[in-house]
Length: 64
Image (cartoon, rainbow, N blue to C red; front, side, top):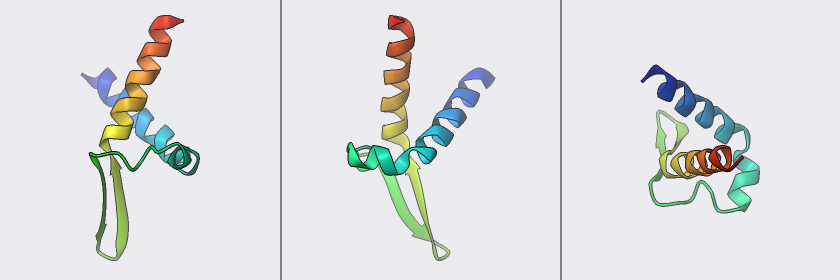
């Protein structure tokens, strides 16, 4: 379980680093990607995009 937690954490870090580039491809605007304002700051939780990118990475890893 700790291994999956680390994988999800690393996927979130990777997604946040590549967010501007991935938004041009449509990631970050999928249903299930939450964007809200709280305490004067905008928060972004990309659940669906992270899941999709994780599935893509797993498929590439299995294929290679």
